[in-house]
Image (tube, rainbow, N blue to C red; front, top):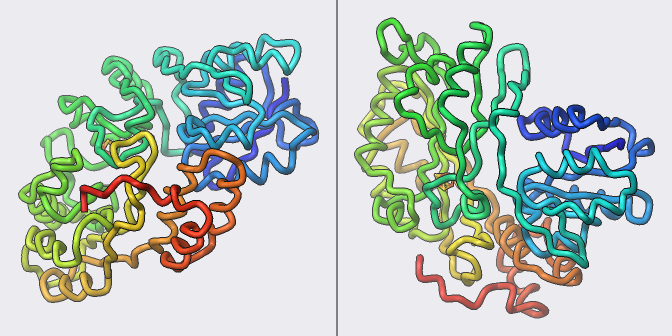
Length: 398
Ligand code: SF4
């Protein structure tokens, strides 16, 4: 069996794609670079924004080569209109079975395969003992660390469509012993469940000196810390299932200055008011001396993802947010902070509504609006033809 990956080249080196390639070759199949030579085309729909790649692939190969799609977003209904086969959940068993079949049509018999006429079951099985250490570059080694997240923040699609599982601790420890000193181990998981292993793990990330058991004080700022803060107010973070306290944010800001680490923070707009930003700014100490180490804040409007508690909420009920005015406030208080421009609200509306579509006409209509930058224009166009897509559930979280 010869397989062609129709993928965004940006992601072809990521841990998941490399693991798929490994499993395919283990099961005596081949990944080919030229689509003309393949028996089947694979597409990974790990994020809703990858839909345009799936759509393009399906239109290109329809009737010529079977298209099979996997990834978390493949669990949503509308995907059925853009694939011949859908692999639900993990691909281990699927690839093993694929390696055995003689006729392409037998794919339909695999237990976690869905087609237009058959519902498959979702396969959550991960055999961590069979996973390889994957050399991503000279210095980086990927290891499949787990799936899902026990935190289950209300807005998080990933945690709600996956059952939580984690790699056994002993496997991580033996992997850390096995890999060369010059390399770092990256566990591909959203959640790191081994606090006792922190020293060992952070050493591999190059952030801790094991001899003295301390974080490394950097001569030049490092970009190691990434924090999903999500909301301004502690009460809102708690309400949404991510109870990071104000004190913890202050502590992280202070420590990052002391150890010379940059921080990147991610926040979601739409559920809080502009003035709520002051509660967040209060967490930052006065600091006007230098701009370093940087604290960069990225915003995007919240998506009301399917299969989460926010599913079906009225998308028109989200507040606007102005990042320039937040930057001005930070300039008066802490010069380390740089607030990046927020992405278009219409962009998040598009992602949300695409997930809600059921039949092909709806999907194609929403897709046709993908480049619309004005959220009001977007909403008005949808309101005229498919008002129910905007959501009927009152947004109790604003
Ligand atoms: S947002 Fe992060 S912490 Fe929250 S459930 Fe998702 S992965 Fe877990």
